[in-house]
Structures are given as structure tokens and as C-alpha cells.
Length: 275
Image (cartoon, rainbow, N blue to C red; front, side, top):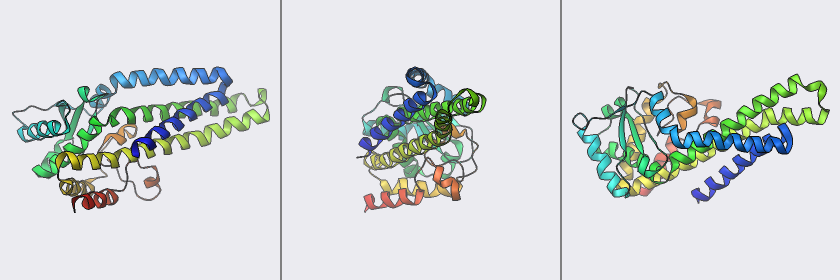
């Protein structure tokens, strides 16, 4: 069901991008928007993993220094029937992790030093199983595409605002109102759709991880620990959807714009699987 929901939301998100192009420049604008989306998705497909690993100064993990981590990744990759991904360490004390890569054969898992410090072996396996689920289900590619298309909508919305401001006298009232609506409503809609896709994939990864590790309770306990530490990590908001838990606090209105479902809900679902 989550796969159908994701496909539907991606279709709607692409439709928003084309509609933005149409409002901004008619049929020609739609074509430009489509070419723009194709271009940035091409870059994301081939280079997003390298870009995000560079952003967080990730370093390849040495087997001799992190034997337990290597053992967990290799064991669970075999259970998931995917190639062993590359393993990276993030020089951050806040416990978190993410997966990246365009396909299972090009996957990478990155964990922070803080994560290795606070989790026991079974909890670490739960987190790794979650990240391998993202790779196996190609969530890393899906979420990158969603974030990229949403970003393209926001770029066009910014252009629409400037167009309405600078070209107001040359355009009719109807066109100005359409541009203003596009500039205000469309980026908000795109943001909510991207977040809905990300949340849906997190639930799916939790459930898949339970099957891969055979121990949903350990992932639930890991999430409980990570929740108590979350909120202090300095991240690029455009990549926050990659992490297993929201890397910064999301209380109040911010929770409406969270790319992650509530941890309490995720824990409850995992505990029900474990019963």
C-alpha cells in the first residue's frame, strides 16, 4: 500500500512542477520545467550519494577499527539479499545514521560516532537493518527524486514571485493572481507531498527492518535512545530526510513540516510486530 501511495504522491509532485511551468510560461514553460526536472534528477541520480557524503565529511570505515559495525552490515546485507554497501563514519557525536546510493549495488551506509557509542550490538543491528531496507527498497533514490522535484517547484515559485513583482504592469490581472497563487501555494503543497513520501518510506523501512533483523524490539529500543539525543545535530535541511531520526527538534509548528513520522508511533508499530 505504501508503494502505491509513494507512486501517487510522486505523480502529483511532478504534476505540480508541470503546472508551475504552465502558469509561469504556458506550454513552453511546461517544457522548460520538464527539462529542468530531468537535468537536476540526472545529477541527483549519478552524484547525490557523493554530494551528501561530502557534506557531512564522511570517512570510509576501517574494518580493523570498526569490526562490530562491519559484522552487522555484512550479516544483515546477506539476510536482505543485497550486496554489502560501502560503510562510512560521520564525525559527529549526535547518534544518527543514513543510507544513500542510487541502487542496491551502489548503496552506502553512514553512521555517526555517537551512534556507535550509545547503542548495543542488537540495537545497532536494528538501525543497520533499517538503513539496508532503504537501500533494498530504493528509497534512497525515491526520496532524492522527491526532494529534487520539490526543490525545482520552489525555484520556479521564487521566479514566479519576481515575475509578478517586476512584470506586473505588463501582465493582466488574471495572470498576476495566478503567479501569486503559484508562488505561495505550490511550494507549500510540494513540501507537504515530499514530507508525506518521506514519512511513508520510513514506516516501510521500519517494517522491512523487522523482517531482515528478526528483532523489531531492538530497533524500537534504538529509536527510543536516539529520540532522547535528537535535536542537536547540525544538518543541511535539504538532506534531513535521509537520517533515521529527525536530526533537529521538531516541536510545535515545526512538527507539521517534519520529514519523519513521530518516533512514538514508529516504536508502537514495531512493538506490535514484536508481540
